[in-house]
Image 1 (cartoon, rainbow, N blue to C red):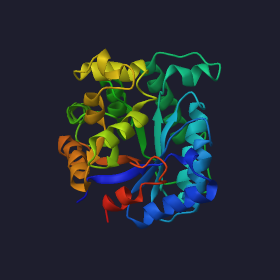
Image 2: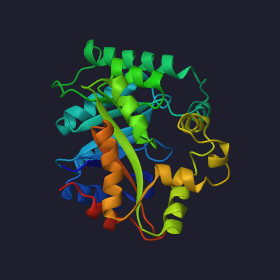
Image 3: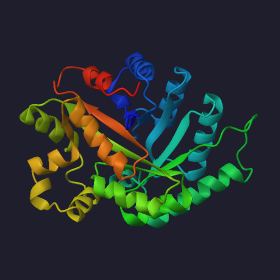
Amino acid sequence: MSPIGGVIVPADAFGATELVDYVQRLESLGYDSVWIPDMFGREIYVTCAHLLANTTTIKVASGIAHVYGRDAIASAQAARTLSELSGGRFIHGVGISHPPAAELRGLTWEPPIAKMRTYLVEMQAAMSGGLLHTPADPPPVPIYVAAHGPQMMQVAADLADGANTYMQLPDHTRAARATLGPDKALSVVLPCVLTTDPAAARAVGRRALSIYLPLPAYQRQWAAQGFDESDWAGRGSDRLIDAFVAWGDRDAVVARAAEHVDAGATQVQLSVNNADRGGGPPWELLEALAPS
């Protein structure tokens, strides 16, 4: 059984027709799910609806809808609607994001653990307490919490169906599984590139990690895993890039994914990168790693 389940899809990088074609091709390759980031381009739930309407079997996930983008009731309403209209193919990923996500909307950043607990309780109360209704009750919507630190992972264990992690080592996956227990899902996102050229791989890795290098939340995680300021200063050290970006031939990337599954991940979701910066979607990689 392949350790690889789904793909993170940078929806804002595609035209409307290109995006549908891309996801339909992933579906034909046997990928279980696509995960749509919540950025400042297309609205995440609207994008998920469009993709669900244009596919038949692949699951579509908000990966991750951040809690400052809409209130808990609006988020629950979107998830419930998407589940009903797709026959249960929507996965509801939610996360705290980072202070700029709140500040850019004129909102006050709140203590993350308390914020997420309150948000999940309010969202689940809206979905189960009769406030929201549709002509037919939708299938249950699985909720995944973006969690890295142990306290947020405990929130996922207490109040969600699973957790979603990004750019973490197998030891982190092992610790996450211990916190979640045996019955919760654990989805691990793995940045990857299909090339055996170290210089090319690290150039891709630096592009992929560049927006995360200055973020204190990631710096704290890296420091806890044995890295220091010299690793995330500037464009990032080779040591950091090699630790968090899987590169090499097909077997090397699959082996990196399998390390996370062996450590307790339910599935690995790929964040795919093209070794050729102007080469378009990395279909050679996606076809090589396809589960089917």
